[in-house]
Length: 314
Image (cartoon, rainbow, N blue to C red; front, top):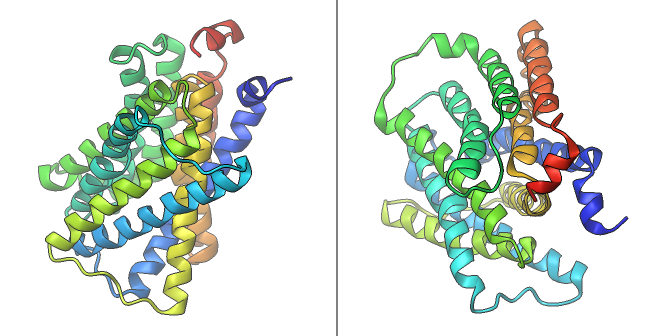
């Protein structure tokens, strides 16, 4: 069994995708803790952009260093790779997180979680209709709807408390979600003939620098780190470097829908880890268990497509 066959095995995909979601899920509580330690307010978007940009730039260096050590060679991009890095960096880091930080400062975390959960829909639609990377089927759409219902259920009580839509908040989060969808499809398309870890590392580095500059132009400041907050930032950088590099490798060898649908696990992992780290155990209730069941059914539904169809989409 070669490397490609291993990375297309559904159990390997599920294990690695779950690892990514667990890492991303831990970021919710880590970011909250980081903002407290660094005295960054929830509505201070410029400070958040500056901090986020620094985090992603360091994540890029981590990914490149780790990839270089594992492959026993420096991950230096070829001239033809710079355009691909720029496209992925624009969608994955610059556009996605610029819109996210601006939007989150003007909307609730609950609505943001639900809107971001729609990125699985968009990744599948963009992959099939714009990039023509795979066929959109009723099975994939049904699984996405079921999984998204789980995300809505997790956030239902907070969502009902504020259904009013505002563009600067909810609209920017929606644009963030669109950028995320384009990011997944772009990585799938552009990683052909390229090292996905190289693309991931360099796009984070360049995107992080751009975000940091935008934040500083908006009045943001580079935080004054304590040893504790510095270690926390390194952990957040590690999350981005490890999770997105693994995700990029999975996207290279699998249809976007097969990988993207596991993104529904992000808020589920976030709730569990927040309950453990931030002592928010009240979130683990019957609604959460039903939501987890819906997410699992959605993932199974999308990945129940015939093996031959999966191979044709690669």
